[in-house]
Image (cartoon, rainbow, N blue to C red; front, side, top):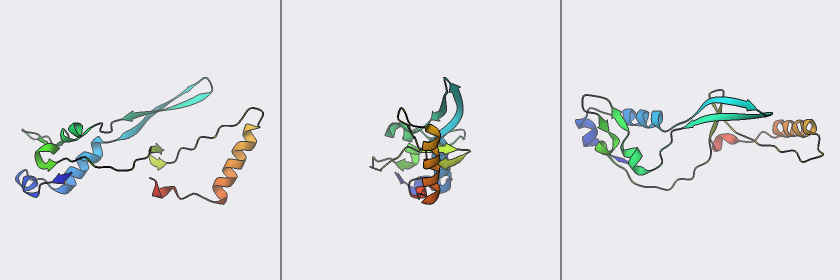
Length: 128
Protein backbone atom coordinates (compact mmCIF):
# COMPACT_ATOMS: atom_id res chain seq x y z
CA UNK A 1 0.00 0.00 0.00
CA UNK A 2 1.29 3.41 -0.92
CA UNK A 3 -0.30 6.30 0.94
CA UNK A 4 -0.62 9.58 -0.95
CA UNK A 5 0.66 12.39 1.34
CA UNK A 6 -1.31 15.04 -0.54
CA UNK A 7 -4.58 13.13 -0.18
CA UNK A 8 -3.84 12.56 3.51
CA UNK A 9 -3.31 16.30 4.02
CA UNK A 10 -6.41 17.18 2.00
CA UNK A 11 -8.48 14.93 4.29
CA UNK A 12 -6.70 16.19 7.44
CA UNK A 13 -5.35 12.71 8.20
CA UNK A 14 -1.98 11.36 9.23
CA UNK A 15 -0.23 8.01 8.91
CA UNK A 16 -1.15 7.05 12.47
CA UNK A 17 -4.89 7.31 11.80
CA UNK A 18 -4.49 4.95 8.83
CA UNK A 19 -2.44 2.52 10.91
CA UNK A 20 -5.04 2.62 13.69
CA UNK A 21 -7.88 1.89 11.27
CA UNK A 22 -5.98 -1.05 9.79
CA UNK A 23 -5.13 -2.41 13.24
CA UNK A 24 -8.73 -2.23 14.44
CA UNK A 25 -10.22 -4.00 11.43
CA UNK A 26 -7.74 -6.76 10.58
CA UNK A 27 -8.08 -8.99 13.65
CA UNK A 28 -8.45 -12.51 14.92
CA UNK A 29 -9.92 -12.35 18.43
CA UNK A 30 -10.71 -14.94 21.09
CA UNK A 31 -14.48 -14.94 21.72
CA UNK A 32 -15.03 -17.93 23.97
CA UNK A 33 -14.55 -21.60 24.58
CA UNK A 34 -16.67 -24.72 24.50
CA UNK A 35 -15.98 -27.77 26.61
CA UNK A 36 -17.71 -30.74 25.01
CA UNK A 37 -17.07 -34.48 25.11
CA UNK A 38 -13.83 -34.07 27.07
CA UNK A 39 -12.46 -31.65 24.46
CA UNK A 40 -11.92 -27.92 24.77
CA UNK A 41 -12.69 -25.85 21.67
CA UNK A 42 -11.42 -22.29 21.52
CA UNK A 43 -13.62 -20.01 19.41
CA UNK A 44 -12.25 -17.07 17.50
CA UNK A 45 -13.69 -14.29 15.35
CA UNK A 46 -11.65 -14.02 12.17
CA UNK A 47 -11.94 -10.53 10.68
CA UNK A 48 -8.85 -10.69 8.48
CA UNK A 49 -8.96 -9.29 4.99
CA UNK A 50 -9.70 -11.82 2.25
CA UNK A 51 -8.77 -9.74 -0.80
CA UNK A 52 -7.49 -6.35 -1.93
CA UNK A 53 -11.00 -5.00 -2.53
CA UNK A 54 -11.86 -5.48 1.16
CA UNK A 55 -8.77 -3.54 2.18
CA UNK A 56 -9.79 -0.60 0.01
CA UNK A 57 -13.19 -0.43 1.74
CA UNK A 58 -11.71 0.24 5.19
CA UNK A 59 -13.14 3.44 6.67
CA UNK A 60 -10.37 5.65 7.92
CA UNK A 61 -12.79 8.29 9.30
CA UNK A 62 -16.52 8.53 9.82
CA UNK A 63 -17.16 12.14 8.95
CA UNK A 64 -20.17 13.37 7.01
CA UNK A 65 -18.42 11.85 3.98
CA UNK A 66 -16.43 8.78 5.06
CA UNK A 67 -12.84 8.50 3.87
CA UNK A 68 -11.99 5.02 2.62
CA UNK A 69 -8.48 3.68 2.35
CA UNK A 70 -8.79 3.43 -1.46
CA UNK A 71 -9.43 7.21 -1.51
CA UNK A 72 -6.03 8.04 -0.01
CA UNK A 73 -3.81 5.13 -1.04
CA UNK A 74 -2.89 2.85 -3.89
CA UNK A 75 -3.34 -0.72 -2.70
CA UNK A 76 -1.00 -3.20 -4.34
CA UNK A 77 -0.65 -6.96 -3.94
CA UNK A 78 2.47 -8.13 -2.13
CA UNK A 79 3.78 -11.45 -0.87
CA UNK A 80 4.39 -11.87 2.82
CA UNK A 81 5.06 -14.99 4.78
CA UNK A 82 2.27 -15.55 7.28
CA UNK A 83 1.77 -17.82 10.25
CA UNK A 84 -1.25 -18.74 12.31
CA UNK A 85 -1.40 -16.43 15.29
CA UNK A 86 -3.12 -17.21 18.58
CA UNK A 87 -3.73 -15.35 21.82
CA UNK A 88 -4.16 -16.44 25.41
CA UNK A 89 -5.25 -14.14 28.23
CA UNK A 90 -5.14 -11.24 25.75
CA UNK A 91 -1.44 -11.84 24.91
CA UNK A 92 0.25 -13.39 21.90
CA UNK A 93 0.75 -17.10 22.54
CA UNK A 94 2.10 -20.23 20.91
CA UNK A 95 -0.27 -23.13 20.48
CA UNK A 96 1.38 -26.52 20.98
CA UNK A 97 -0.54 -29.70 20.25
CA UNK A 98 0.68 -32.85 21.95
CA UNK A 99 -0.94 -36.15 21.05
CA UNK A 100 -0.21 -39.22 23.13
CA UNK A 101 -0.21 -42.54 21.32
CA UNK A 102 -2.41 -45.42 22.57
CA UNK A 103 -0.84 -47.26 25.48
CA UNK A 104 1.18 -44.23 26.59
CA UNK A 105 0.66 -42.55 29.95
CA UNK A 106 -0.64 -39.04 29.08
CA UNK A 107 0.47 -37.61 32.43
CA UNK A 108 4.06 -38.74 31.78
CA UNK A 109 3.97 -37.25 28.30
CA UNK A 110 2.83 -33.87 29.67
CA UNK A 111 5.53 -33.94 32.36
CA UNK A 112 8.15 -34.56 29.69
CA UNK A 113 6.78 -31.72 27.56
CA UNK A 114 6.80 -29.32 30.52
CA UNK A 115 10.36 -30.35 31.41
CA UNK A 116 11.62 -29.81 27.87
CA UNK A 117 9.87 -26.46 27.57
CA UNK A 118 11.56 -25.19 30.75
CA UNK A 119 15.00 -26.70 30.03
CA UNK A 120 15.46 -24.88 26.76
CA UNK A 121 12.84 -22.18 26.33
CA UNK A 122 12.14 -21.63 22.64
CA UNK A 123 12.36 -18.11 21.22
CA UNK A 124 8.82 -17.69 19.93
CA UNK A 125 8.98 -13.89 19.82
CA UNK A 126 10.51 -14.04 16.35
CA UNK A 127 7.33 -15.71 15.09
CA UNK A 128 4.75 -13.48 16.78
